[in-house]
Length: 237
Image (cartoon, rainbow, N blue to C red; front, side, top):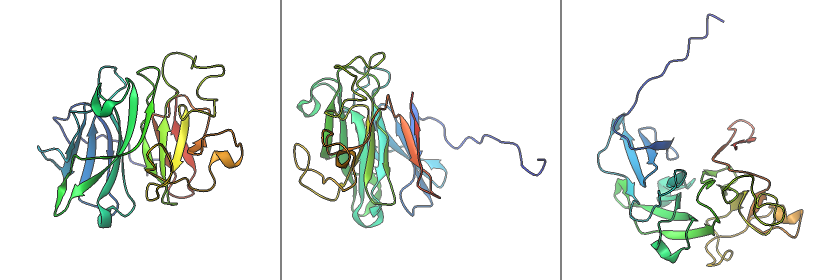
């Protein structure tokens, strides 16, 4: 159709280190937030890259395996009011006393009165240890239901050779799953840092961990909900 213009690429920023994700905060029309895999979130304000990171987590992010790093970012649906945001990252050795190959879901808060920076102190919502360093998943999305969805890889290695049937099919692990939790609630998890919403997979199969929403995944590196009909699309391997 000659009425459809050809696709074009427009460079919007340079001097970024391993940028892997870009998103915006709800209702914010002037800023973009870019994840740099080594552990920083950078700001594009009115098209200009700020030199000072919005959030710098390089002191706690592991990058020793290619797929490790700061992997996901999602803003709370009421971010404009509460300043809360959520990130996922591969934990560096010794950070938080985690075993090797641990993936962390953590909550941060924008600095009051300073929308261009987030405080570096975190509330750890969920940690998941993995047998190997690859297939870390890491994407985060809030759906219209206000719940947080978190994609986790199957534990790494080749062909999911973990346990009897592989982590992706095992219901007693969060690895190889899409997790669905209520970050505004409390009471579930090892530290009681979130709540379990109704409708998760365990209501269909009591053997499943209560956080599980979808099973049988390999490495849900990126996923998204269709804004028109809420269908879920997963970029898996």
